Each structure stands twice: as structure tokens, then as C-alpha cells.
Image 1 (cartoon, rainbow, N blue to C red):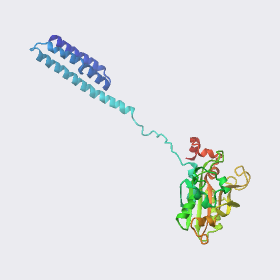
Image 2 (cartoon, helix red, strand yellow):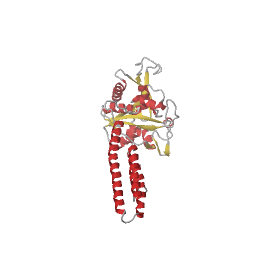
Image 3 (cartoon, rainbow, N blue to C red):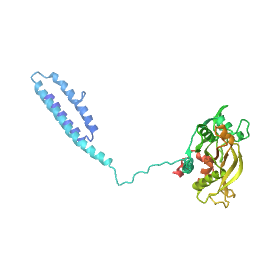
Image 4 (spheres, rainbow, N blue to C red):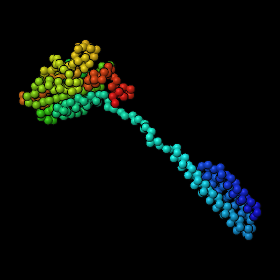
Length: 343
């Protein structure tokens, strides 16, 4: 009995000594396991109670319980003190200085092509045009035949495209959207058709097999070339500035008659001649003309009663002029150094 008592007292003394150096919750848990766990020191000592006589066991058991209770009490008290200390340290470490400026957020922006498309559509929306869209995978009939470009026509050479089947292709222009609208509704029609188009062009500084167009169409009674000129003059002034002038040059498109190329006075020199316009004072930005009567008839519209005009704007060329970009590939390379200029 005396030996067991001595072991218990030494255990308590050793426990109190180790408890003084415990600095964290993890240290306390390790101390509890070492002294009071299933394989701890206290459990090992209590196994020796079996060698005591029946008369000695009650006193030994009472002492053992007192020692265990004292150890548990000491652990609880130390746990409260250490928990408070750790909370204070955590609060100090995690303190937020509300007066400190916040970290700047990296805010993106619209792609320059999207910006130009939105600006063009906004100008014509203000003139009462609706926005129409159609599929990029199109029928040869809508893309060529109904636009007076039959198989073997020379115009197909300049619009060489990607065929999926002999009758299905990636559209070379957004004109098929105009065809679809005219087939589905009778005049008056007043639409702009923005979208992506495809041609089998080699990629270089000024050509891409993928590019964007915004085409416009107006069909109604008594529509004239004067209406087309007035609309394009207003478009040029809204997009390039109030001092901008336009110039029409005769041209040929199979789907319009008469047809024209439309130039605007150079946005850099105002028409005087500079490097941007190659000394000419004018920059070509779009093609236009009066819708050919055969195209109207192909879509079920009476060409004797109705007339119309159409135009097509190259988005990349317009964006290159607006922002001084000299390589069309910059639009598609996703270089963050390039795109970040347009935030």
C-alpha cells in the first residue's frame, strides 16, 4: 500500500511539473493521454492494485480517485487559461485594419470587336432598325443562290469558304440573315445583322479566315438611293465624328443594282492625306446598293411594289481604324497586353 501511494503522489508531482511547461491545447491533450489515457501512467499504476489485500484496496482506490480528480481539475483550469491566451493571439494575428486601402480588383472589359459591333448596332437601333441574327452554318442556297450567285459564278471565287457538305457551308457573309427575314415577313423590313463569317483566306496582317460583319437591310415602298446615302451619312458622323464625309464609288455586287463602295474621310487627317489613308484622304469602310429585284422576288416579295437598300460593314477594318491597330491577328490572339488597353 505504501509503495502504491508513493507512486501516485510521484505521478501527481510529475504531472504538475509537466503541466507548467504546456503552452498550447495540443500540449494539454498530449499530457492527458500520457498520464490518463488507456496506456497512460495512472492506468499502469492502478493495475498494481490487484496485489493489495482486500483491506487495503478501499483506501488505495479512494486515493487513486482523488489523484485522478486533481489531475482532471488541473487540466480543465489550464485548458481555460490556454484557450483564452490562444484566442487573444489569434485575434491579434487576424486583425483587419479597416483604414487600409483595399486591394485593386482586376476588372475586364469588352473586346474591341464587341465594342465596335455594339456601337454600330446602337447607331442603327436609334434609326429604328431591329437586330436580326441567324446561323453561322448555312445552306448554299441562302448564302449564294438566292443572292444571284449561282454555282460557277465568279463571285464565289472571292468568297471561297468552308463546306461541310456540298449544300451546307460556313456562311461567307451575314446576307443569309437578310434572306431568312425576307422569307419570313413582308415589308416594311428594317434590320441590321451582326455576326461572324468565314472565308478560306490565308491569315496575315490584313486577312483572316474568321471575321465579323454588320449588314443592314431596308425594304419598303418608295425606298431610294437617296435614303441609303442619308442613312450612311448619319452612320459615319455618329461613329467617326460630326466632320466625317462619305464618298460613293460605282461597284458591282450580284445582289444589288446599282452598287457602290462607300469611303469615309480619313479620321486621322480629315481628308488631307496622311499615312493612315495612304495619302488619299479617304478610307473604304463598306459596300452598299439597292437590293436587286431578283433577290426580292426570290424571297417572295413583289419587286414592282417594293424596293430596298442593303449595306455591309467590315467590323475588323472599322476597329483597326478606330483604334490604330495595324494587324488583324491582334484581335484573335488573346494577348492580355493588347486586350487590357480596351478596359
